[in-house]
Image 1: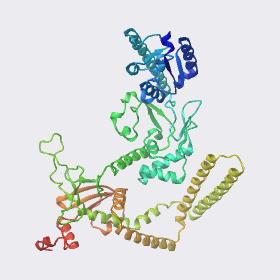
Image 2 (image 1 turned 45 degrees about the vertical axis):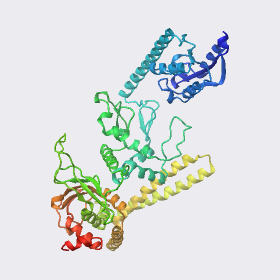
Image 3 (image 1 turned 90 degrees about the vertical axis):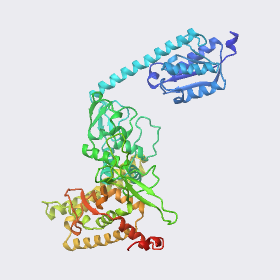
Length: 577
């Protein structure tokens, strides 16, 4: 007894959310532990009570803040014994339990459970610890099996079983199935369209969403968590890689943790198909739009400039026309005696003759200087400087079968629509000023009016195209021609980084034929420049194939010598230029 009087104790209390309901609350544990301490005449300091709420017993020490603090204090010998109400309050995994007790034993600190009597200082006590730890682990596994069985049954019935629903959906409290949240669903659809049709990066989508003031997702269960109404790239990435928006999702399809785009395209991160449980939900987008977004995200990832020392104009889009394999970029530093900035080039697949595998070295795609591909950029500049591309796009606004009166009526309807929206916005401001309408609801409603207003303006602009007179159309053509003349001038002075960005937007693939000095270039848009060039073209609605002659080594060398006659003075004497 005298020993016990001198012993300082620490108590550890833990409860998960589910266990709180079952009568294992922190208060209950604390009361029983304090009663036990009083009966044993231990000494307890209040600062050595470690309370852990909402943490699983399967987590290691590092993942539980209070338990981590307990072991730090144990190293500093601030107490002699650790008490818990039951072993499963400490750990629900036998391995973790034994490792923790071993750590305490090294510090010569005892461990006791007031519900299961044993002594960790002898072999019988350690055996009992192992046995009870195994029981706790088995109980945890049983709970997990029951939970998973219930979730599987619910998923087969089409119910939502995986926590907080994705942005754009909410759970019907009666049927437990997902319902659309219209305003959020329209935002999701807009994000997909920005990625697919404007080829924006995740960062650009986030930037635009924040600039437009679009409300970001709010946590639906933890009200105290603040999001500061800000969109992040990772949030948008999760939305754009969630196939649920196509109207079909699968329970237990992906291995945990879900790694966004990587999990979506890698079969290794997916479970066997027989484990998938199909769930049908209201669709937000088409399957086709989702697939296009996935391909664009993969393209964005491939074209990402992170971890690269140098930028190249045609990197990752240039291929050897002979073997079909991608060509890689390289850099040759300038010679010291000549100065200069060095040469960027592209080269083929280099493998030894005895290399293992089917990809052999291609001798038809040697090093090819980037400067020899200047005609590709020149061609793109001419295409971008052609106003006919825009004029043809404006003609698509034509509504066949509608007379002028019908079109005028449509314009009038949308003008009235704009007036009504303006009245609603005015009333909303008055309500916000004079009533208890909170700021969040005000901004949300104002954004809805803004979207509706933009839609009406777009409709008016679209229908107005049909009412232009011949003189108006001529004026429009003159304006566009003047505008594209300015664009042409700007394209002449554009820097390397902006040129690379434009190439990534409009060029899909380049097949290079070095020996023949030409490249087959696949553009991502149609153009009206064909009549001005003697080129071969394969007609497709959205893709243009051009065979463009590249510069030979002699032509490049001639240009360099003419531009730098002093630098190449010795070489010039031996060249017939």
